[in-house]
Image 1 (cartoon, rainbow, N blue to C red):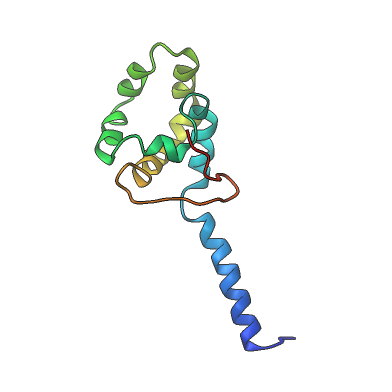
Image 2 (image 1 turned 180 degrees about the vertical axis):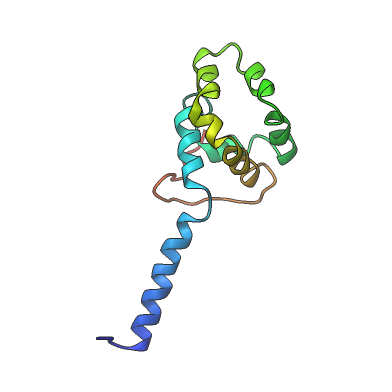
Length: 118
């Protein structure tokens, strides 16, 4: 039994805002980057803002660029060669580009990230 059209509309607005918060960025890529790269590079949003779109494209142009860049870090090399990184590679690049230096995105608190700064 519905109470009123106004109550229903308020519920839909609040529920819709909750769903859209999870769609502001690729949460799965955020978590993969945090797990594989976060130990050295910190929070993915901060990490992504260090480069612009073209620089991220250049790093991901072929596997050798990233491997050469991390050649003195055994754990990083292991992470870059992992199945998980290879599977999410395109999504990770998209995340970095979407949140890069000139992307104009500023994220607030959510379940994954709450404004920590490095």
